[in-house]
Length: 386
Image (cartoon, rainbow, N blue to C red; front, side, top):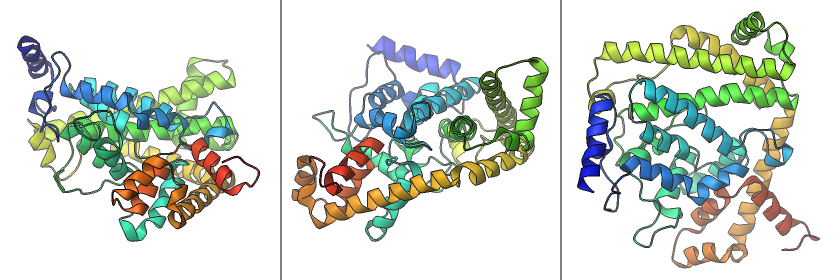
């Protein structure tokens, strides 16, 4: 066993960059455990996340389109897998710890509610006087407290670095929260920074795919956006005749390639200029090292604006969001007024003097889209069996 442990250490010290986070330098777990003989700490974290109930539920949680809208559209689970794939590609290029990257990527959306960001907004409003709701912090609650797999401790007992990656996840939609015990004011590891940017690349490009498939986006209008037009022109130059579906796929594929390539070149320059030699060097900087060039950012802005105006603010998406908020608010109010309507497990938590509203918040946040819809029908439809 000790020889395998030494092998893992030697492998990381030999092949990973100086500024990569090595598993043998981890700050450890909340509850001491004997480490596995042939899997690193971050590999075990990845496996624990994959086997968690919260990870499985991502299959039926909304990305943009509610689950019953169709099987084609991305869910939180497929989005998470796409983020992981993009993040690993970038991580390998910089000789970062791809096991840590994968673990953070697979965990970054665990705290999401049903019905996407509208569900999160509803719960945050309902919990405004009771600590609010933030899906990063909810993700931490899930891996620290709510998952039950081990008799020795609550949660999944993940390493400090993976838990930091969950708390400090930042994107266009996701706000990093300063949490005591996770170095507030310090930059996260480069591994976490890679996941943040991979998340942005994934949802920007794949939301276009879903938007076009749904008919909510018009490709003729999309061609007025410079970045899309550039990719469309490049694909057309390579392939004179393509089916519309194939051409769309090739354009999105090229867009992702361009953005990842730009990101790698720009990040490489930043690392060189900052002269970072360690994880602590990266943490001590006043800005992130992983990012796009100014040229790419200027090309991305009109595309993001197009998505915001034509997809996220489309009347159909807004209607779905408003319905979702209403469902969640009415479910919440029923449970608050009569906690006995909650399942037995949640009632047991309340009897143990856990805050009633936080228990209800945990319960609703953990629902899938269809679970929330089924529960709503059971509670409000007089002809539905309870």
